[in-house]
Image (cartoon, rainbow, N blue to C red; front, top):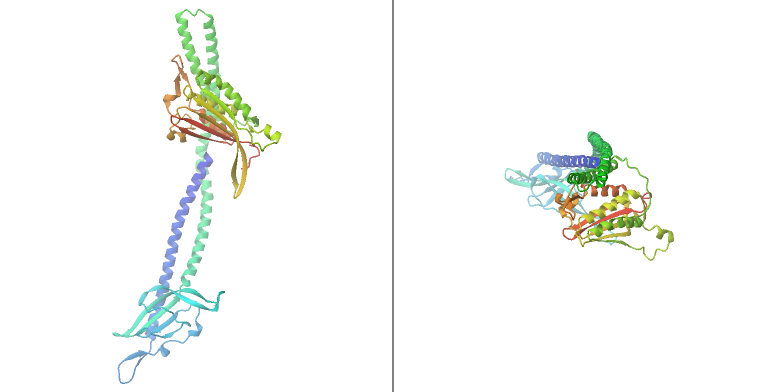
Length: 480
């Protein structure tokens, strides 16, 4: 229980920290990317301003005042020395005709005035050929700024400045990788720290729980002796009264009171025994050695013991064995087909509680079926490796009053009762008889878990319930 709580706390620490780190990393990445784009746009605009100031103007002819740009004098002819990280320039006429460019291959992009910067995709072709003989094409991304150059109201042309987009994507990807590695290391560190801190935080709770369990075990053990002494004295007194004059009204009254005391002390003794058993299971005191237990013989013994109570309540109690398959011919395997490694006394208590619980809540003329079969299940051990496990499946079905669906999740809780009014029944003489303390199914679950098995319940109100117990065959050789 404490390990599961500790795991949940550590998982919550890790999950919350991972979400916060992810949000922080996303903010850093977006800020870094936007800052990088702004820096490139500022660089492109600065280039535009520098180029505009260095433009050489000349008259078209001496007779007119019309001006034009002398491209040869204004721009450096470096078209043959273009590098990947080079800022490329393009000069267009007022009509949009490309007049000069540093690019080896003109861009097939129409003029679009934009001083704030925009990202465009350009399709380029390789000089070589693809496998099918067609020239290969690839696309590149460019960041561009386009400005209109004019003198007063006269447009002289258009200047477009381009910068490779990978100057943004390359550092952005590197930052993303660095952030991912950092987040991964931080999550691992937080997981380890959360596991350590959750253990430290739960130490006082664990100590208190251990003291409570020890107190329950000690108190239950100490209560057994006085309760047994009370029962012995009551039985001796009842024996003496039976030998005395039974016509005396006073003695009859005393006898009835002692009978009531006997029933109450018996109920209290059963409760103390149940509490002691659960306390020892919780504290790990019960370390009984397991031995080979033939479950078929064990169930026969339990059903025979319960047949008398079933007959008194006019209930049919059936026991059924599912025979081994015809393909199994090994005599040794067939002989131990229903044998498991377990504790005989605990298993007796397990199935006595289940069948007794079915008898308690099944009306007269009802039917209780106990079925034993061997089944195969496939459990994943680690990764993609699977392990085939043989199990014994015991089903206890009844046609009783059933259990409401909302009560099923808490059915195995200690002292939990579906309906307190159903915990006591009346016998034929109208006298109240004890039926349970709310610990029967809790003990059942504790025994099943002690044998590393599982238990499920299915129930329909008014139709009955089915308890299914699965117990592994070879407990000692089972893989985990």
